[in-house]
Image (cartoon, rainbow, N blue to C red; front, top):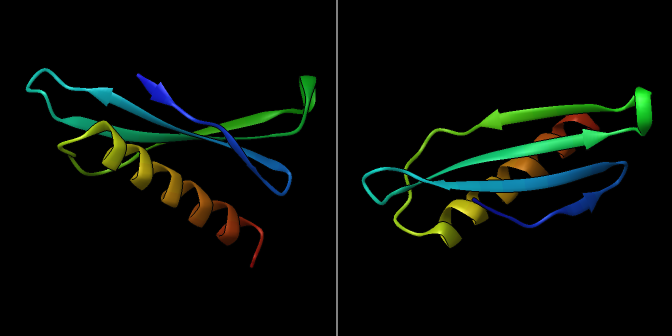
Length: 74
C-alpha cells in the first residue's frame, strides 16, 4: 500500500493505493478532520483500476481534493 498525506484547509487527505491480485491497482482516499475525540475520518473507495500505483495515487489525491472543496463549498 502506498500513501502520501497532504493538508487542505482543516482536512488531512491521504490518498491510498492497493495492488490487486492481477497486478492492477485500486485507489481510495482517507479524509480526516479534527483532533482527539473530536476527530472524524472518512474513507472513500474509488471506482477504477489502474495500471500503475502512481496513476492510482494521482486519482485518489484528485478525488480527495475535489471532496474537500465540495465539502467546504468552494
